[in-house]
Image (cartoon, rainbow, N blue to C red; front, side):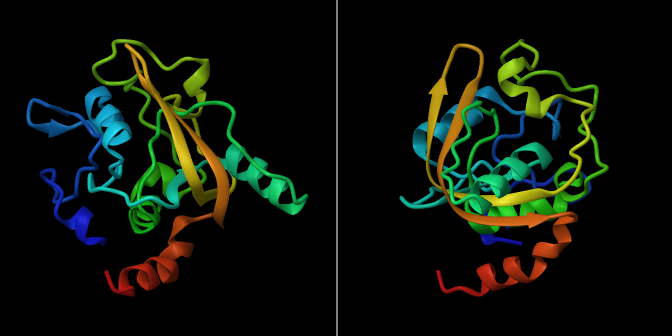
Amino acid sequence: MPDGVGARPRDGRGYPVPAITPWQDGLPQFALTDYGRSAECALERTCSVCGRFMERGPVWRVVGAAESTAIAGALAAGQPYRNLAPTIEGPGHRACMLYAAMVCPYLARPNARRRAGAAGTAGSGDPADELTSAAVRGAVRGGTGAVVGFGDYEYAVTGAQVLFRFLDVVGFLPHESADEHLAELRAELAKPS
């Protein structure tokens, strides 16, 4: 576990709670994204998982099957890739995203589904729309996911949500099951800080 993740508040089971996860009645709402926390991560360039500052340079995120396939196709064709459809899911450190991909049930397995009872972004009151369809609750992740590094990101903080777009793929680590990243995570954690 990355140090920053280990320092996060824990739920009743002892699981660390990501920086963008809202709390309600003393319980983390893992299937939701907190608007204010997500905006803070965008504006202050902090990791959406551990909440710590991200230095200039590559940022990472975990993607599902459709985006993983598009990135793999672009890379195989020697073409640049840029996600033109914004996402509500913010960037993070490489180690944090490798860890998140492995421990989050939805990110880790192709047959996992996001909890269907959670709609929209916490604090916004708006359900997911066509811009955030990748985060539709109840949807199966499907196929090959990936932990992807990008040269940078853009964001827009609107009255209802925070949207991210990612630029210039600099790393692509596909997986069927995210436990395939264990060696990568161990190597990342062994690097001197």
